[in-house]
Image (cartoon, rainbow over the protein chains, first blue to last red):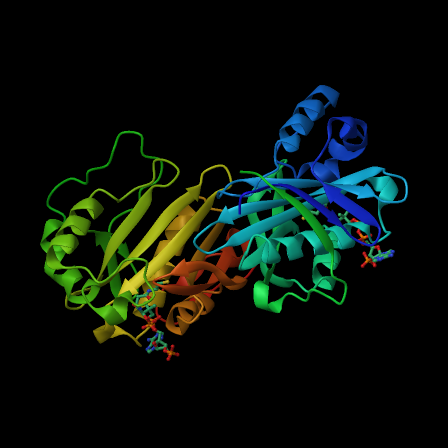
Length: 197
Length: 210
Ligand SMILES: CC(C)(COP(=O)(O)OP(=O)(O)OC[C@H]1O[C@@H](n2cnc3c(N)ncnc32)[C@H](O)[C@@H]1OP(=O)(O)O)[C@@H](O)C(=O)NCCC(=O)NCCS
Ligand SMILES: CC(C)(COP(=O)(O)OP(=O)(O)OC[C@H]1O[C@@H](n2cnc3c(N)ncnc32)[C@H](O)[C@@H]1OP(=O)(O)O)[C@@H](O)C(=O)NCCC(=O)NCCS
């Protein structure tokens, strides 16, 4: 699993590690309240978002539990950075991974997140030999719940009032899919990777 | 069994049950050193340990566990455990144990658990004892939500949760390894307002819904 640089091409997207020049694209959505929940580094303003971006840029390997691979979601047609997908390696003995994602408001409802998440879950199973990939989302995040269900993930948990989130009782959904259940679809994604010694 | 020595309660205790917690047929009380044989009689059994994280315990391990439990009697902070011996009121036999773990102070969350000697299964004792501990969790310790976890195949365990009025919130599949195979886990939970107070803790718990 010593893969340090991943580039995936799908029908309309290029998924690749963040580059320095992606900063403005990321700033356009990173600090939004509906995105913040799903990020490792909170950011209330531009300078915090910048620092967070620098940290995300370093998330390029998935060799040890706790590590995260973060890929920018770039539109093929015009090279715009629209969002990102992250895959966290949460457990090595049980080969588990958690997926998180965000798309800027300008680019929503066009199927981009679905396309990106599908590719990265497939990557998790094929390249990183995960056994199960799961996603956690807020109970009221219907867009995300519909997306995960549409991709064939199963609702495994619905916690009610399990924690306070910004002063309110929170609900959390867990979706999951096992390697043998995952439908890769007819389309085989073109995967280029660069192994490091 | 009477409590001859004062309980080893640290100074900064926030919540301590009024011992013993009494239910219709049972008494929940702190462990003491005389409990080792009774604990060994069920914790040594493979059938009891089948779905537990712990393997069957030998006598020495039981003695060690009992020693640790004698101090697990109150909540003073996150992660604290209350581990109580359950004895029958009529013959004072120690028949099992119940536990409550303070999982989150800020979010007022706790986890409940129970283990009973197979000799006394099928009589509602586990439900009754857990009811007594839930009453403490909600009414005295001010918890907002109490949850319980079990192996998905441990039907006897989640039937206790259902009898207590807990709802299934999760069924994880192959999310971890457990004793050499894929684990499936269920989580059940109940909120303070759903509990609403048990009118009476017997095997057939009657919960007031508000
Ligand atoms: C949740 C989120 C990622 C969805 O992104 P998105 O790109 O709008 O998602 P998609 O476009 O793939 O799917 C959204 C809708 O567009 C529809 N759609 C439109 N054109 C489509 C196309 N060409 N192909 C597929 N779907 C298309 C989908 O059917 C879907 O409809 P539905 O919600 O009624 O089922 C986005 O709202 C977001 O970033 N939210 C904040 C962060 C977040 O919640 N992340 C999830 C954490 S796990
Ligand atoms: C989990 C465990 C405590 C459940 O024990 P249990 O005896 O099934 O549970 P209860 O004491 O609540 O008894 C309920 C049963 O007694 C019956 N019963 C008989 N008299 C009763 C009475 N007066 N009141 C209530 N129920 C009564 C109920 O109908 C029920 O039987 P059913 O499940 O066949 O319908 C027990 O199986 C055990 O110790 N297992 C090993 C340890 C373990 O796995 N613990 C849980 C870890 S998550």
